[in-house]
Image (cartoon, rainbow, N blue to C red; front, side, top):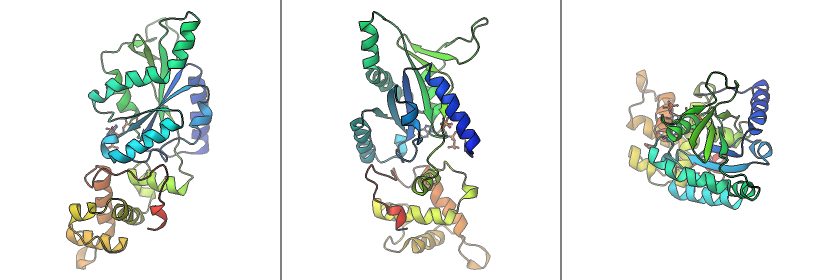
Length: 288
Ligand code: G4P
């Protein structure tokens, strides 16, 4: 699902989020593990000031494991709980419950001191489009979980999914806008496929990606396309076009087709498990 954001949408999303936040203890924020910085909403920290926080680095199956670990340390150093995840896999969900309780332990302890026992933690999932919010809720909540508050006579409004005796989850995720105003974040979001390709220059994106691959993951292009990696990005693109028979009539290379092919290979993980940014980003995008 890809979105176009306008100031009106952003205001509405922000207002909705402020309303929902009144109901919850914990914000479960999903980010894309391939771009954990650029896939965060720019206002989430200000919006969620008083709340417990858990960051789920989703699509970790597509990301570089070492870099995911360094991002995890980075988030934890900043005081968040952080867990990496493949939201499609049920087996990854076991660690989530512990992480939720860990993230809320101060709140649970405060309640306990006040004599409030067995009050479930109320959580909501938030994130920019396409990070896997719905997938996560479906996998985590599963079919077995009864929705509360959807019986006749119960006040209309937000519905809660009772996950277990300790946790309830708001059934609709908060959708927030990405950092598209930052050109670097815009490029990263485009590369992972979060911005509609039609409004982007495919050739430039593919060239940036090739520059990145060559520098950050030497050998990956050779392995996938059997090409000479020493060339400039434009030379790499031409080599791949020839290898993959991306030619128009008259032997002219079809750069749009080869660019799409490379981007698809990257987005599906066929090129390898790549993370585009590190906490101390190297700036490869400026050299492309
Ligand atoms: P959203 O609610 O945040 O907008 O995201 P959603 O759950 O719809 O997930 C977006 C796409 O990402 C889905 O692919 C989903 O299967 C995929 N996805 C979610 N979590 C993971 C994960 O941990 N790993 C991987 N590899 N993929 C994940 P889709 O429906 O096929 O959409 P698309 O890929 O055709 O855009």
